[in-house]
Length: 388
Image (tube, rainbow, N blue to C red; front, side, top):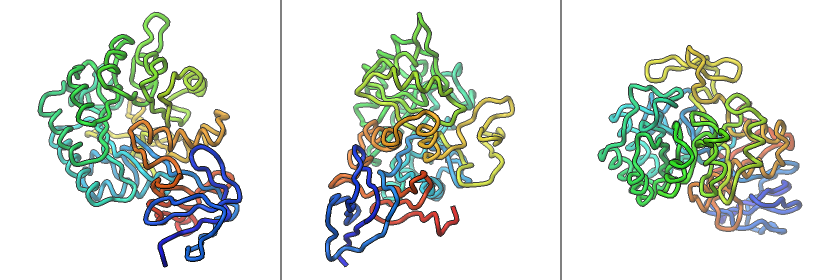
């Protein structure tokens, strides 16, 4: 067997257009073609009546499968998180560390480096969300752990990036200087603005300094005002800033989502993130985070005072929300979960099914239920076998 696989019978979305009556060909972990013919030496996989689309890319995943990365910042924790989200079509994710102590941050960095060297299926890189945020917009982050970025913090991040393909950090201008942002960007780290009360002018200046993203648009940030447009105004008006969006119906009202989609200046895009916690793929009724209980109820995760504490949603559910509730065309909803996040972090081999791209894709039923997940041309999850 040559290693060539031919997926036949499916409607194929390559990230830009649909292909009907075609064959998806993969070999050695990559897409080789979308063709009219099945090579004689290929292993044929019957996908008759199904949909094939680029695998989902999630740049903000705090946990899954019963694991919070903060509580288990090791390689096994990363593996369990990646496996949990693969069941919902996510083929590449940024494991996210919420604001924590320096020793936990260091452990997380080492775990991420080890997972990257092991080519762990589904692991794309690390997202450090804090601790350099604004207490005024802390959300569920522990205010006792929020602090200014020091030289040692910058060193941890840059050392991590030297050994890991993708590193993302969410920062607030209140606790990180423009010079530090420029240094992070020069090191190849993606800098996202979030958990901040900053105004429009400062946000724009930080974008000029190297910030290229905004974390969970509308949440934990200065709102859009008619005299002070805040970070929301900067996110929508600045064509350099890609924006993550939690599409669960709780974090952002559908009316606000629609306004944002219509208002966003390009070429940067709005893309989907789950901000998922450990509950994904489990029946758990909650979990502990920095010594506080997070409660799961009715699709929401909250602290005791009602503060939203991350999200209880998977990426396929976000896509269905955008398509079914927001009337977003399916191909655009799929791009928001694949091509757009890939572009936001410069993952050029992902988010599309073109010759040379990574063979990371999801197979769905016509009514957008899971069938199977493939990473590097290998089946990672089979919904029929798992009972999902």
